[in-house]
Structure formats: C-alpha cells, structure tokens
Length: 131
Image 1 (cartoon, rainbow, N blue to C red):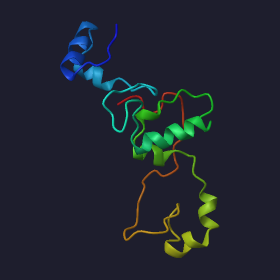
Image 2 (image 1 turned 30 degrees about the vertical axis):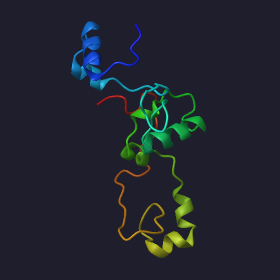
Image 3 (image 1 turned 180 degrees about the horizontal axis):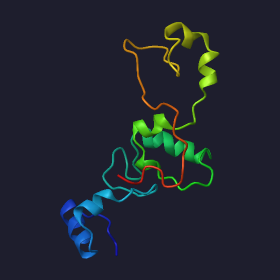
C-alpha cells in the first residue's frame, strides 16, 4: 500500500490497519534512503548532523558489510564508535598545547568538551536499532 503524503492522523490510522500500536510505530528503526516530502531546501532523504556523518562513514566502507542504519545514530552513538585515531592526538602539538589530558583533540573553544565513552564501542550489524 502506498503510504506517501500521509499526515500524522493518517499514519496512525494506517498503523492500526497493520495491527501496530503507536509505541511499536515509534520504535521502528528508520531506514536509510527513506524519502520525505516538505523537507527544506528540497524533498528527499533527511539526516541530522550525527546520522549524516555515520552515512559518510558507511559510504566510505568503515562498517564493511554490517547492516547499519545511519539515521538511527545520535551524537553520543557517533562519538562512541571506535573509529577515531587517538595516536594522532598525542602526536599533534596543538592538541597537547590546549589540553594534554583529553583523549581527543580540542583546539579551540571557551569550554572543555567532554565525551563519555569516546571511542569505546565496536560497530555491529543492527547497531542502535533498539530502544
């Protein structure tokens, strides 16, 4: 059944026809490639900042053949990925100048950024698709 151009009311009706509760509907993982209408500046795929970066990582092959939906990643999920090179930080004098105790390089800003879990999570298929 075609579900394009449905308003929220009709989305709920369609979900009920498919025996899905509102909770089940909201818990469904969003799939990369879903198209949205009414998104500025044009219609098409929609990404927030963190999922956009994960989509770039995915396109670059960092996840290999894992099943990853970039749109399910939050900023915290992105920061926790084990994709960051901590050796770069220790070899960069500008990083050491500002805060030698950070495991990442922050070279500007009035406030120190803290990222709990930075670089600690190995990616896996279906990552971040469950609440």
